[in-house]
Structure formats: structure tokens, C-alpha cells
Image (cartoon, rainbow, N blue to C red):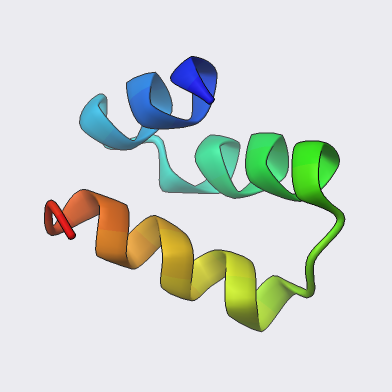
Length: 42
């Protein structure tokens, strides 16, 4: 999901969370963890 990674790298985590949830449909808690991990390079 390139738009998610672009948002993460630009520091726009809320936008990244919105993109991720729209694409995957997972819960907010899981989405936030995934975005946090992506921001740390995991």
C-alpha cells in the first residue's frame, strides 16, 4: 500500500490510518499498531 507508506514517511499518521483502514477493514487498534510499526521500520 504505497499511499499508506508515503503518509507514514511524511509524518501524516492519521491519514495513513485512514488509508489502511479503508483498504483492510481491520480494527483501529490493529491499524494503529501496524502504522506505528511501519514508522519504526518493522
